[in-house]
Image (cartoon, rainbow, N blue to C red):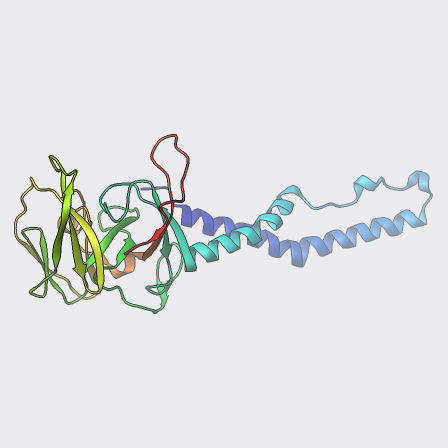
Length: 271
């Protein structure tokens, strides 16, 4: 299981928020009363017998940090859970659309608002469409994956000769070129799924068998754009609607693996 940052963020926000509430409604008023009494007593007795200024009740360190961090954590939690979440591309399964080292923004509300950690949808907005790039949690692993939607509920998907057929209709692929031009490792095609045009890579030396899948209600069929180098629904099955994280919308930064500086020259919208 991967590092569960959303859970830690929720727990940290809840903890500091509880301290903040206690500070506002109980701890701070109590300190003020105690300090007021100390000041009153100080005025009644001689200065030689008065308590030192340091003896006045001050804000405990834990409370001070919690009050400072709670607004920041709350803003981050709201932004990350309901608006946008950053995500780094860890593999080459979406080449050429997304490269290893791309940092992308995931729109968390496009497919509906969901509660953080548990993922329960509380408000519908839009339904996933074929051709869109989606971030989700696959059925075989508790981690974020990113692939392209090629089958929505009710679709019959067939993969034959590295071409997608949806409900018997062949999806258009137009040859673009060889990569590299001599002794190619990949063939690049422009593919159209729904209303979305995008590039894909195919391995000219790897053969595929004919496979068909029926997508039931509440599930989605996902493929990587690097068709012969992608672990996707062909191997581990369909993605449940409950495990949708959001729609990938833009690349905002790129960093090559290793000790390299991030760059912002490859920023772009995701098609």
